[in-house]
Amino acid sequence: MVGTPAGHRLAIGLALLAAVLHALFGALQKGRDDPWITRAAIDASYGLIAAPFALFVVPWPEPHMWPVFAGAFTLHAGYKIVQAMTYDRAPYTVVYPVVRGTGPFFTVLFAGLVFGEHFVPVQWLGLGLLVAGILGLAGHSLWQLGAQAASLLPALGLALVTGGFVAAYTTFDAWGIRATADPFTFLAWFFMFDGIFIPIVTYKRWVILPAHRIAPLLRRGVLGAFVALFSFGSVMLATRLDTVGMAAALRETSTVFAALIGWWVLGEKVGLVRGLLMGLIALGAVVMEGAV
Image 1 (cartoon, rainbow, N blue to C red):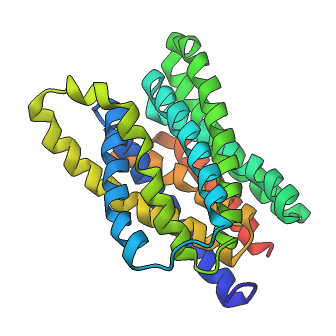
Image 2: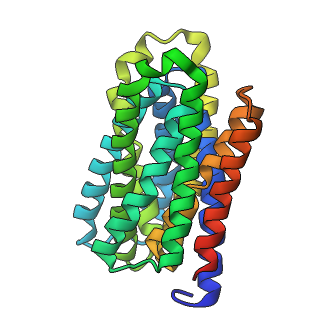
C-alpha cells in the first residue's frame, strides 16, 4: 500500500487517530500528579506490555537495528526529561501548543534533509495556517494569564526545546521503522526499551510517594500505556505509508483535541478566540491534505 492512494488515505486516518490519542496522553501525564511519576507509570506499563510481543511474537531485529534502537532510546529519553520539566513549570494549555506547534515545522525540514521530501506551495500554506493556529492557542492562554505570563518565559523556552526533540525523534523513528522488514518489530522492541528509562530515574520519587496514591497512578499508567501504544504506533505506520512531514503535521491537530480535553476534563474555558484558532488548525490540515 506504500505510495498508493489507498495507502495515503490510510496514513491520513492513522495520523488523525494519533492526534486524538496524543492529546489524551498529554492530559493524562499533566493531570494532578507529579508528571515525572505519571510518566514513569505509563512507561513501565507499556514496556511490560510490549516485552512478550518483542521476545516471542514479532521477528527479532536484524543486526543493523541495534544502533537504531540506541539512537531512538537516547532521543526519547531527552524528550521526556525536557517535557516533564516543561509541564512542571507552566499550565498544560500554554506549553502543549508550543511543543506541538514547533514540532511539525522542524519535522518537515528534517524530513526534507533525510528523506528528500518537499512540500508544494499550497502545502506550505496549510502548514503555516496549522502552526499559526497552534501557536495562537498558546499566545491566547498566555494573554489570559496577564501579569503571570512573564514568569512562564523559561517554561516556553523549554517547550521550544521539547518541540525540537519531537521533530528529531519523529524523523529518526520514521527512518528506523523503514529500516526493518517488519514495522511491528520496530514498535515492539522500541516500546520495550523505551519503558526502562523514566522508571529508573524517578525511583526516589516513588519511594516517598504516599501509599494511597500508588494504585491510582498505576491504573493511569496502564491506561496511558495503551493510549501511547496506539498513538505512537499509528503515526509511525503513517510515516511508513506516506510522507513523514504530512503525518507529523496532521498529528499536531492534537492541539485541537487537547483544548477540548482541557475544557471538558480540566474545566478550562474554550471561548470564541480559541474556537476560531482551533478552526484555523483544522483549515490548515484540510489545505495540506487537499493539496496532495
